[in-house]
Length: 549
Image (cartoon, rainbow, N blue to C red; front, side, top):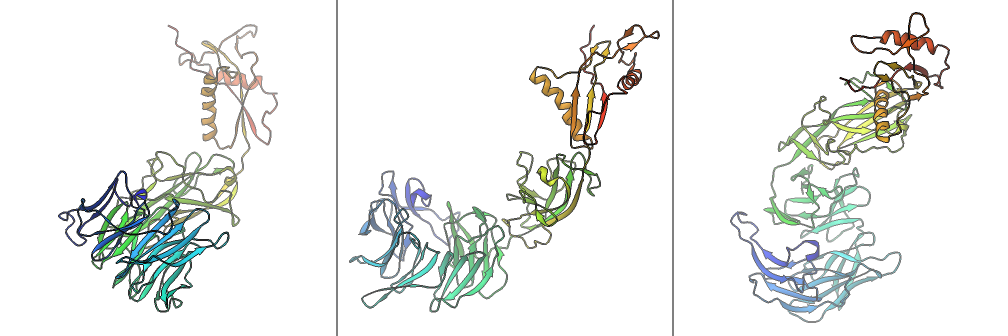
């Protein structure tokens, strides 16, 4: 349909030789609906001679494959309903045109119709009109080649087969549910089942209940397969997690599936002609069916828990309740074809437990910032702060002993040949420390009185607070409390103790030792300002006074 980018703007139908050299094979426009329509409101169905579709005026049209832009499409029928909320799919066999009319709005319904290619009566083959539980519409229409058709009902994504019987039609639920996508060979049905795990299955068309599992792809990252195709030798499917995923190939005779593309946007169609594989992801692509395999192996080579500084062996002690970061080092161990980066998000997840119980918020995603990469590269450089993947730990994680586990490619967005080296674990202990309190005393110096109160100006106040915030990060404590009690500034007494002078703190007149001694004496009997077993440190905060010339 034009509104989901299956066709270029304005709405056009084009053709190109499938097996020719792409650089010399020209694209020919068969039909241009222009900007006024009627537009194409269905997929295209193709036989040996014609292209078929349903228009926005609810007419069924066809056009010779040899047509040019000036050839007028032939109207050969019309839909039964003309509701604007209808969605259409169309397919053909040697003698008939099949289409579905699905109402996705309330009341949800699905209907399947058939008419002869030569014209004639439109016949209702199947319908589902149920309100409430059990309602569903029809999608993924496929003609069976014998006058009948397969389709999926969106109620439980169940596969149905409707075929001619006597003067009417018989519809059968094939006992195949959770169908994400399916395709037909001459003898078998192949489908991707998504109930919990993603499972690739097949069954004889003559006996669909005897299905067999070809591949169980598991449920890590909640995979699905929006498209599937088959030829005489292989079955192919796109395996997506989120909106992207690679295409896999598996031999019909057995063996492991092989990844044959990088990550692709979710495809709306996938088909093989035995020589090439074709798909639609906004553009039409093709790939030889014997294309080389893509391989990838990622690993996590280190995990560091950082408060101020840390080394690769994590020997630096950690303080309970202090702001804490975890730095993880993933990398590409090997890849074919060679890659320097692979994009995936989240590239790493961090899991945390305490005594086997998951910690609140586990798993954590990386801190999103410009420098924190959303990919995995080939090199590790601890000296580059932008190298590695960073996490900020919640406060509830930074107490006692916790177990941390970092997993690269956690949702398996990128397929790998080996997942055993994708994680690293570390047991980390945070030790409780008492707070540190600073009692800032005023001191008179030759160039003015030192800082002893918080400035009223908000900008100046934030500037001074930044020094203490930095000190709190560097000191072995989770909290640095600052007291500015003011009072008379301390001065340097003369030898006869009657008069006093300001302290000199310059290189030529350094009274710092004398000042600290007198500061200690003057506060000898002051009480401890720091509860919880903390220690009070009496100190002076001397600002940079302007130089007077």
